[in-house]
Amino acid sequence: MKRPHRWITTLSLCLLAGLVQTGCSTAAKAVDPVHISSQQRDFDKQTGILRKHMQELQARGDPLGDYYYALANSDGWIHDVTDPKAITALFEKAAAKGSMDAKILLALQVATSEPIPGQLDKIKGPKGKLDAWERGLSQLLPLLKQQCAVRRLVLDEGRPKVAYYSIAYDVWPEFRDGYYRNNADGSRTLLKDPVRQQEWEALHRGCRTPRNEWLDLAGR
Image 1 (cartoon, rainbow, N blue to C red):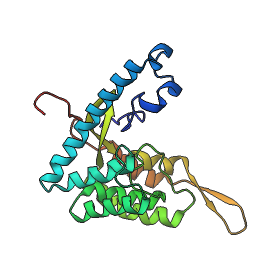
Image 2 (image 1 turned 90 degrees about the vertical axis):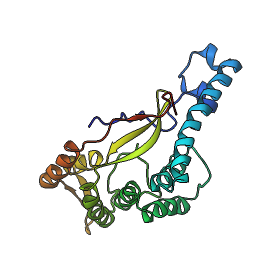
Image 3 (image 1 turned 90 degrees about the horizontal axis):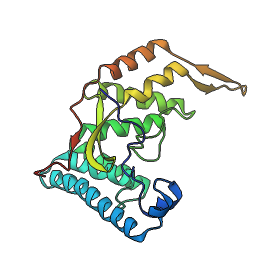
Image 4 (image 1 turned 180 degrees about the horizontal axis):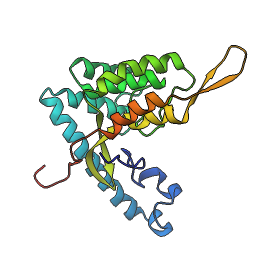
């Protein structure tokens, strides 16, 4: 499976308020109100396609729609829910309805001690909380053996699509490079585990997903 590049994010366009600061456009275009207005209309159109796809799934009672809704709030391309606990509750709701994607990201949240599930562009690691790391990985591993990747609604070069993220991709390097355990005497021990690296790396290497689904094709 080809991993989506980390620069492919839900809001990976040089648009809106940050347009001038990002340097993603020439200076002349960046200050041109007509150009900015055109960018805004295109942005609204593309994110509208993402929202329409999500809402169609929700209308059919597909838990994938609830998962996308939770992740869209986590990613920040919609702002219906902003409180971390409330966003986590959206994932829990989707998981209760049967969304494997939501179950996987909830387990990953436990492992990485993140305030909200998702955060798929962040490097994964235990953040010094090794008990939570081990607890989360013990939940995560059997899930990934059933479904190795999660889906995400993104804009890739301005086009809306469903992208797939291999979760083990971010876990196995932690065992290769190591992470620290804080000892009672104030020292730190670097922990590496070649056996677990091999297990998680094999899980990633063997992850096969469908082709990315472009949502702006004719007929949608």
